[in-house]
Image (cartoon, rainbow, N blue to C red; front, side, top):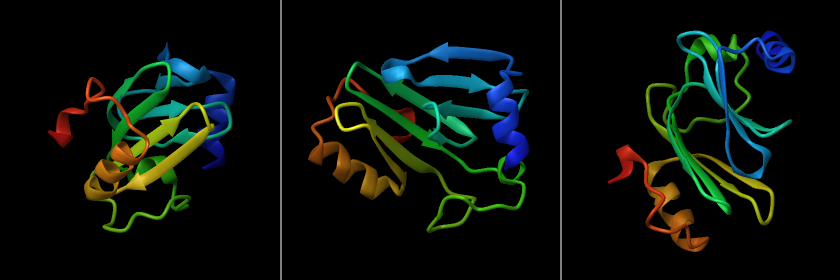
Length: 122
């Protein structure tokens, strides 16, 4: 985990795309795609994301390479499942990892617009 954080801090990434709320999408090598919110992050492998000025939504399939044996996040159904994340800019919250059902509920709770859609959820 330290190595991954160190590489993020040193900006040894192949690509960085600026998103809303100060977040960036970072691609490091072939299999390390994360969303970085400057101290909080959605770990790899980020498989899809969308954003507007109020929210970032993302899907993620965790990989062992990213965690280096250190499970920072609790994955209810193991690392072979897809998980979902919601960043709420107004309250500076990161919700996740969520199951598909949990994700759909928090979308409704926080009124995430239908225009923000992930490929895997519809």
